[in-house]
Image (tube, rainbow, N blue to C red; front, side, top):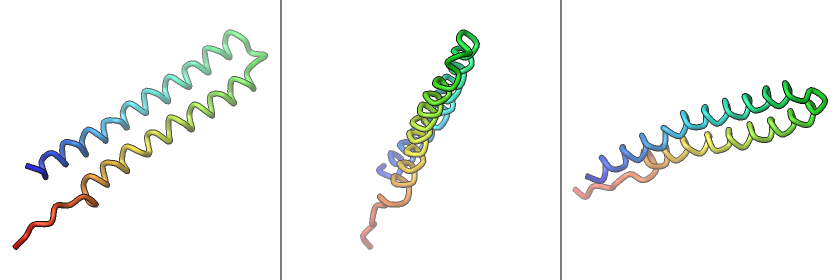
Length: 80
């Protein structure tokens, strides 16, 4: 039962990768819209977009880390 719960948890953690892709899409879409509205602030907007991209990517890297932790590190030790 514990192994099944760990597999479900690892699968749920990998779903966060798809959500990170959506977040990156939103950051880049907002950058394109803001530059189209006000081209004079393109340099400042690009800096904010890179910051948003980096933060979103950092969250995306935590998801596989948690999946690996659940899968490999927290193994149950069966007594013989």
